[in-house]
Image 1: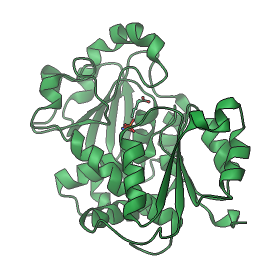
Image 2 (image 1 turned 45 degrees about the vertical axis):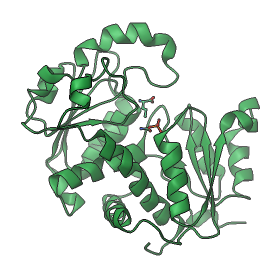
Image 3 (image 1 turned 60 degrees about the vertical axis):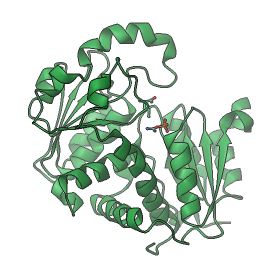
Image 4 (image 1 turned 180 degrees about the vertical axis):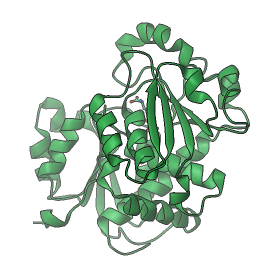
Length: 316
Ligand code: CP
Ligand code: NVA
């Protein structure tokens, strides 16, 4: 039996303190230079996917290998989860074989249940409510472009988020609050972030200097922003709503005209996959301000830092 008391999870961005996130970002920057280590030697990490994934699946698998461990990518369709085995039993059983679980799940409460019963760290690879690993990579990307050596320098940074107030937006709100950033979210009516996340972000906003504003007007949100971020209009599992969402979200498209309202040189960010011509134009995605492929690469480095932090006290 592993010691349940000592394990930590990374399910919400708020599961780590600001100091812990700072350590993870600094470790990620070091791991970007020195790619391999042996901190996961002899350890196996299960990567469970209930939804498709390119970046999360491959970057976690490669990251585990670069840390000397073994990744096991599991499409949830081949597990008994598919036939209704509970997250709690799955977590208890997998704890007897694995050293950590990364899971992309339909519902956030499924991960919470699994983590509550697992003796090993559980890491959120995206749920309907959060995508914390993505936002860690986004923060590292901003630090690199702004030449911030210390993550605390993110304080006061202005980021505009356009589109659906769901998983990526929620994790961004918690991150912005933690670092005292100025985050403006422009979301269509009915697609705003959940009220409980607005409350969580307000409570987490202890550093001072930060603000989280939710509005409907994308032009207002983008004004003076140092980075403009967008995500798909139709998240995984919402495909039946595609037509309806396209009409509702079209004023939120990140295009040249909207970008021109941001601070000159503002970073263009997207978690990917992108739908060119929908939430972002080809011209902006491929333009000089776009850092989207750096964000994607940084998934690898930050996740290696998270695994190192959760599975060993040693530094890589
Ligand atoms: N951004 C992101 O999580 O990408 P994948 O869906 O490809 O994992
Ligand atoms: N909001 C998107 C993010 C994809 C990485 C989704 O949930 O599909």
